Length: 383
Image (cartoon, rainbow, N blue to C red; front, top):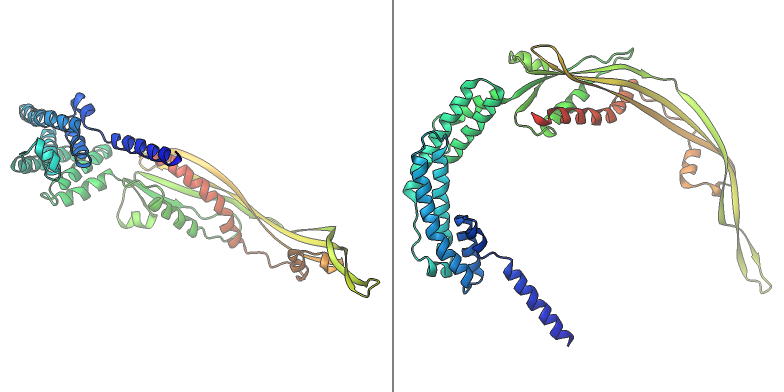
């Protein structure tokens, strides 16, 4: 009985899975003849005797042919449509795809034995569509705005995808890309304060973030040296200023506490039979821990500035601190009461030398970098 139930369940599941593949009837009822043909062909591949799929294909294919012919005639009679040949190209491409899919479906060929290929019409439309996209791109490029250049770039890419290397499209793609790109110069002022600190590593990290984190093909960041070398007139500046970086005084504190450990072997004894047994008990020690700390801190001011007008478009300050600490310890009592970490601290006779200001500065910038990159990401999200 259990075996029968399992077989029945599997059979029902098989029916449900088979039914997941559409016969094309739904797409046909919506007038989507292309999708109806493809779905019916796919169904006939897995279920050659499926009458619904065969019926859908028999109805959808002639309708797809008729729709392609009528739509092509309408588009040819509408010269005001800026991308009519691209639409015609896509229509012929769909019809050729139906013919290719039918050629790989024996059950489908019984329904539609002679599907037409539109190769000459497709190639003619391809050439006209490439020229069409090229001319649209040229018009956008002449507009001279960054947004228009982005549209030009997309249209030149469309022309290139239709016919790789069409005319001088490679040069035009570079020209449009350059006009469409927001050019940003990243400036970093010297670190303010009494210490001689280099923030070059921080600027390098921000450059790397622009390359990998912003993920916008139409934004490019330059160093001031690159901008000068290319005689670049940027669109924006990002100015970074570290304000009031300070290092405090070394402070020391100590803490004494009792530590203990239970179930430690503290001795042995012999019972009446002369057998030796281990005695377990609690061991104690007084542990004194010495801790030294050195605080450093400051503020990063990030400003995004319109280069032409010198106006500040967005600005934010990021305060930060970094506290370096070290410790050593001593004890009185039973060493076995100490943990491994406490024992290691007791092996030390004092703290390590405090890091120099440059190293403290590097550590201080770690959380600030995270805040800055979020600020940059949010600002340039819509560019």
